[in-house]
Length: 133
Image (cartoon, rainbow, N blue to C red; front, side):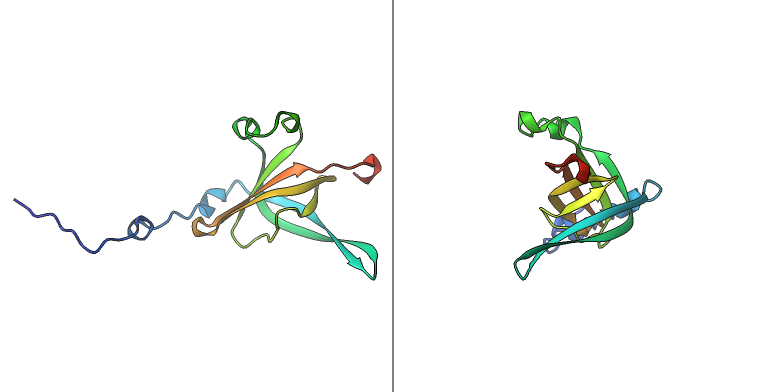
Protein backbone atom coordinates (compact mmCIF):
# COMPACT_ATOMS: atom_id res chain seq x y z
CA UNK A 1 0.00 0.00 0.00
CA UNK A 2 1.34 3.42 -1.01
CA UNK A 3 1.53 6.18 1.60
CA UNK A 4 0.07 9.61 1.02
CA UNK A 5 2.64 12.33 0.52
CA UNK A 6 1.66 15.32 2.70
CA UNK A 7 4.22 18.00 2.08
CA UNK A 8 4.22 21.48 3.54
CA UNK A 9 0.84 23.14 2.98
CA UNK A 10 0.70 25.45 -0.04
CA UNK A 11 -1.69 28.18 -1.01
CA UNK A 12 -3.95 26.87 -3.78
CA UNK A 13 -2.86 29.73 -6.08
CA UNK A 14 0.79 28.80 -5.55
CA UNK A 15 0.18 25.12 -6.14
CA UNK A 16 -1.76 25.51 -9.37
CA UNK A 17 -0.55 28.87 -10.65
CA UNK A 18 -3.02 31.60 -11.51
CA UNK A 19 -4.39 31.55 -15.04
CA UNK A 20 -3.41 34.54 -17.15
CA UNK A 21 -6.80 35.67 -18.43
CA UNK A 22 -5.24 38.49 -20.47
CA UNK A 23 -4.66 35.94 -23.21
CA UNK A 24 -8.43 35.46 -23.55
CA UNK A 25 -8.70 39.08 -24.68
CA UNK A 26 -6.47 38.40 -27.69
CA UNK A 27 -8.43 38.48 -30.96
CA UNK A 28 -11.40 40.09 -29.13
CA UNK A 29 -9.76 43.44 -28.53
CA UNK A 30 -10.60 46.43 -30.65
CA UNK A 31 -9.12 49.94 -30.73
CA UNK A 32 -10.89 52.11 -28.16
CA UNK A 33 -10.58 55.85 -27.61
CA UNK A 34 -11.69 57.43 -24.36
CA UNK A 35 -11.40 61.10 -23.54
CA UNK A 36 -10.72 61.55 -19.84
CA UNK A 37 -12.32 64.73 -18.51
CA UNK A 38 -10.17 66.29 -15.81
CA UNK A 39 -11.54 69.14 -13.69
CA UNK A 40 -9.32 71.19 -11.39
CA UNK A 41 -9.83 74.39 -9.43
CA UNK A 42 -7.11 76.87 -10.28
CA UNK A 43 -7.11 80.17 -8.40
CA UNK A 44 -10.81 79.75 -7.66
CA UNK A 45 -11.80 78.96 -11.26
CA UNK A 46 -12.90 75.58 -12.58
CA UNK A 47 -10.50 74.46 -15.32
CA UNK A 48 -11.49 71.49 -17.49
CA UNK A 49 -8.91 69.63 -19.56
CA UNK A 50 -9.19 66.52 -21.65
CA UNK A 51 -6.75 63.66 -22.11
CA UNK A 52 -7.14 61.27 -25.03
CA UNK A 53 -6.59 57.61 -24.13
CA UNK A 54 -6.05 55.17 -27.02
CA UNK A 55 -5.81 51.47 -26.19
CA UNK A 56 -6.99 47.98 -27.12
CA UNK A 57 -9.83 46.41 -25.14
CA UNK A 58 -13.32 44.94 -25.15
CA UNK A 59 -16.48 47.02 -24.59
CA UNK A 60 -19.76 45.32 -23.81
CA UNK A 61 -23.08 46.26 -22.24
CA UNK A 62 -23.69 45.28 -18.64
CA UNK A 63 -25.38 41.87 -18.44
CA UNK A 64 -29.07 41.60 -17.61
CA UNK A 65 -28.19 39.72 -14.43
CA UNK A 66 -25.98 42.56 -13.20
CA UNK A 67 -28.57 45.18 -14.21
CA UNK A 68 -31.13 43.43 -12.00
CA UNK A 69 -28.94 44.22 -8.97
CA UNK A 70 -29.27 47.96 -9.62
CA UNK A 71 -32.08 50.13 -8.28
CA UNK A 72 -35.13 49.93 -10.54
CA UNK A 73 -34.82 53.51 -11.80
CA UNK A 74 -31.24 52.96 -13.00
CA UNK A 75 -31.78 49.79 -15.01
CA UNK A 76 -32.65 51.62 -18.22
CA UNK A 77 -29.58 53.87 -18.05
CA UNK A 78 -26.70 53.02 -20.36
CA UNK A 79 -24.12 50.81 -18.61
CA UNK A 80 -20.91 49.50 -20.14
CA UNK A 81 -18.07 47.19 -19.15
CA UNK A 82 -14.58 47.69 -20.50
CA UNK A 83 -12.04 44.88 -20.19
CA UNK A 84 -8.35 45.64 -20.75
CA UNK A 85 -5.07 43.94 -20.04
CA UNK A 86 -3.47 44.99 -16.76
CA UNK A 87 -1.46 48.19 -16.80
CA UNK A 88 -3.15 49.63 -19.91
CA UNK A 89 -5.51 52.14 -18.22
CA UNK A 90 -5.29 54.03 -14.97
CA UNK A 91 -8.85 55.17 -14.36
CA UNK A 92 -10.34 55.61 -10.90
CA UNK A 93 -13.87 55.40 -9.55
CA UNK A 94 -15.78 58.65 -10.23
CA UNK A 95 -13.55 59.65 -13.18
CA UNK A 96 -15.49 61.08 -16.13
CA UNK A 97 -14.79 59.92 -19.68
CA UNK A 98 -16.22 60.48 -23.13
CA UNK A 99 -16.88 57.39 -25.22
CA UNK A 100 -18.55 57.67 -28.63
CA UNK A 101 -19.35 61.33 -27.87
CA UNK A 102 -21.26 60.37 -24.70
CA UNK A 103 -20.13 61.18 -21.17
CA UNK A 104 -19.80 58.30 -18.73
CA UNK A 105 -18.79 58.02 -15.08
CA UNK A 106 -16.54 55.21 -13.84
CA UNK A 107 -18.67 53.41 -11.25
CA UNK A 108 -16.33 50.56 -10.38
CA UNK A 109 -12.78 49.45 -11.06
CA UNK A 110 -12.01 45.78 -10.60
CA UNK A 111 -8.29 45.13 -10.74
CA UNK A 112 -7.57 41.48 -11.47
CA UNK A 113 -3.85 42.13 -12.04
CA UNK A 114 -2.99 38.70 -10.66
CA UNK A 115 -5.00 37.30 -13.58
CA UNK A 116 -3.69 39.80 -16.14
CA UNK A 117 -6.72 42.02 -16.72
CA UNK A 118 -8.81 44.88 -15.37
CA UNK A 119 -12.54 45.60 -15.61
CA UNK A 120 -14.16 49.05 -15.59
CA UNK A 121 -17.89 49.56 -15.08
CA UNK A 122 -19.24 52.74 -16.66
CA UNK A 123 -22.63 54.42 -16.38
CA UNK A 124 -23.97 57.15 -18.64
CA UNK A 125 -23.38 60.40 -16.77
CA UNK A 126 -26.16 62.87 -16.13
CA UNK A 127 -25.87 65.96 -18.27
CA UNK A 128 -28.20 68.91 -17.86
CA UNK A 129 -27.26 70.40 -21.24
CA UNK A 130 -27.76 68.03 -24.22
CA UNK A 131 -25.50 70.27 -26.32
CA UNK A 132 -22.53 69.02 -24.25
CA UNK A 133 -22.83 65.49 -25.59
